[in-house]
Image (cartoon, rainbow, N blue to C red):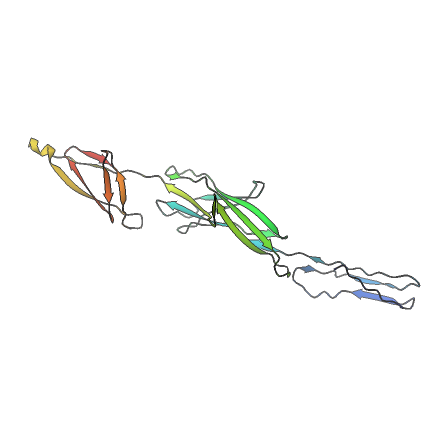
Length: 239
């Protein structure tokens, strides 16, 4: 680029035609003009050609929706992609089961470092605790081969955690009320205790384990899907 060559000792009155070979080169826009003219005595004719090189590339920014408490539904959650000036440049929703979120590809025509943020739009499901987490996305576009192709390197940071592009929501917990009624004329039966087994599985049928507080101040311990509690007649407990 910027190079020139001069031919000398060309007789005056000679006509010339100069045309650049326009074979396709990746990333280059070739000057396809034809330069024509006549050589004049003691003057230098000029034939100047300008070619333009532009590398191009695309990148796809992604996130993952995690919903604690159940499997997310298709398109249940909406996400915004914002540029460095906090302007919205994309909207995407989640896939079912996997929770994958993929924004439309972004086109680039210059090398550089580009910064974006991902935020979740506030939903209206009152059973879901929506996240205010923000993911910072850095896209570095590089022309590594000089052949018109920009290659992206994408990194994600959530808070102080690198390589994390998850946004986590939680399904608000519910409760279960268990009550015992005793029909008997024997007064002693009012103090009789009855034993119950509570079985708990998740939405996929997997056995749950954990400790669940109860309204009487006790804690129900569930191991491999089963927990035991006792009630007397007239007792009600909520867990």
